[in-house]
Length: 187
Image 1 (cartoon, rainbow, N blue to C red):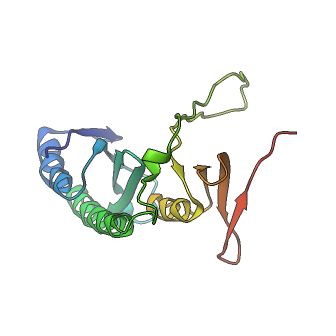
Image 2 (tube, helix red, strand yellow):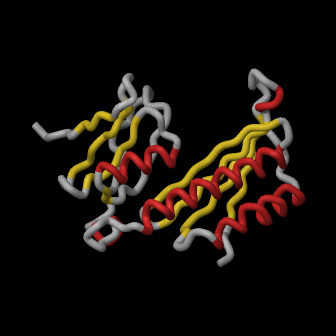
Image 3 (spheres, helix red, strand yellow):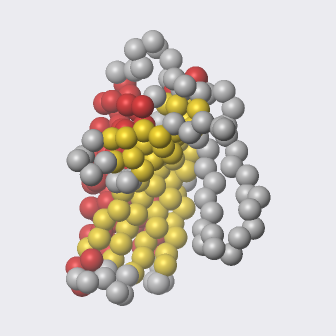
């Protein structure tokens, strides 16, 4: 299956050679994971990085039904950063497939449990909000949320729709390395 790869560059010129290299390397990932909706590669040059070996950044994000996989790698050479990111993504895909091929226990996937996607409305107009994000929540249990949090590299918190309680929850990492769960209730 051929992946449609969207490549974006920041603080650098995106040449045909770079696009071809990304398509060749990242395109191979499509053979290992089914049902990919979007593949995005963000390349950037970070002039202010402390070390010269961390200035070229390659980030790969793969979105599919019920999952998001993201990796970021830095190197002194852009092609090396891309290679390292592809290798890291390959390991993440293998880890993801290993966890999800075992199933949920009852034979249903999280995507089948989903009722309707939750829409986030943007109603507050306040100049103090610097950035807004909208995303679709896929129902999952707490263990799946922990796994998704690790796969995305979110170290502090993860917002998810808890299929067990039919509510939006926030999973966070505590100082002692354990996890906490915030279950909001309307008052």
